[in-house]
Image (cartoon, rainbow over all chains, first blue to last red; front, side):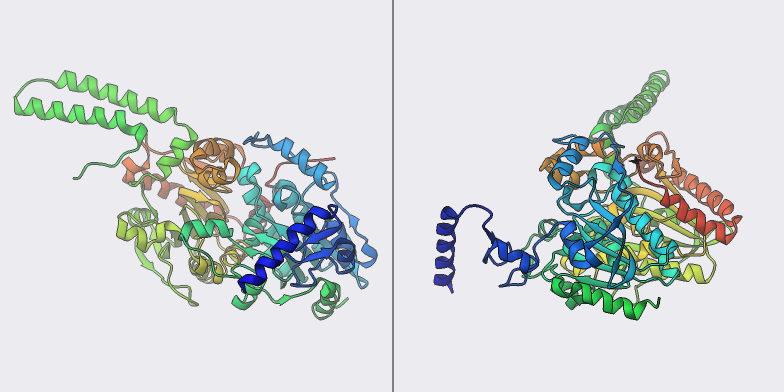
Length: 280
Length: 320
């Protein structure tokens, strides 16, 4: 196989030089080069290896909700800087940069929408916003999305994408795990369904709270999931990790994911599930 | 007794202590009257202790929480309970020695007691996996919580962990799921829960048994979203910057009180719990019994709604 890999990489480097940026997209999983305009049609899924590219929250809403429409709630929630946190950068500056980069006020968008006419309470996280990290605002918005599901008697769907709790808000971020999970206990009591959708990546504090607590847990193919990050595990055990470790497929095999669903089937899968779990 | 282990900033104290004991030996050996000199040195020692312990940095407090002689869960269990019956295993996979627990009596109050356990010597440390739980530890704890719920026993929890274990087996068996489930289920338990952070409270590893109606922390314990070293490695790209990270993360007991994440700080004896196991344990016992007593007076509905409300309101944000 060695000769094959070599020739492939040579072709790539030649192409990169001659083609204007943005015209082609390279799959970060298998290295396949795809014509960018075609990616939209492919729902940003690599045609060669089915790796699901990370897409914006709005694109995701377009894929999942009727008419791509979300009646957004809690738009005015904004992070403060409770610890006056500063590393190489001040926390408020990090937030500003993230807002400019994403055009979003915070790491989660939430509200009400419908899927095939079924009313749901919905929230979606955005990895581009400080690694999709959960601070007070993300926790509060998720909490309120759960409360809306309880109050309005609507199934809850959360699309997770996060590196975990936000360090810059310290212990308050950790406590968002408690806050959200507490409300999920109430949601479960009311027998209102919760579908948790895991996208690349969903790890640490988010995985160790609401992302793992769905009645049904759906994951996109080849996403990185887990509690500890692979780098930390590698350092701790001092050896390389097995191939495919902490992927969606790995967690499916180990029994922690109900179903691996391709993006094109996501909407229909959510609908079919809700038809079983929710009688209107 | 072998040479006592001590922290860097404790050195002047240890040196002065040695000087006093040498002088005492000398006075006895040579039959010399040195009691006034000794008394003045002892006064100096007390002042030195207080001076050092009253101006500790956050990082120094983190070091005290990790002191090799700091009392661990089983020390408290031994010192404050009687008739402890340990209950082993998660009923699914194995018995996690980093998480201990079982029935116990605290004076005349029967409780279910659960705690994270570190080891004292090398062999014991390995056996306890340095206080880092696998999913089995969390599932073992949950099994005991359910038993407490079933038999109406208040739950007492000791937190002391550098984190849930980041390893292959832990991931394979659902570390995240185990922690998430515990957090959710702890909000449904129909008995009082008293949590005491006795040493290290690292992240989800701590929170996985950390939901309580009353959450108390010992003066020199810490509790954080991530360990100072972990945070330093990510944000400063250098684990050696842990002292800076400890400052930035605001991990100490008084910080947590300011942030309204804990209900009470339990003061430690002047030179830390590690130098005074018995005194510390008695204080912890009193606080636990007081908390259980007042929680038992609450009607069940209120206990559960207060527990939810306590965590529901945590967070700091603006709303336009």
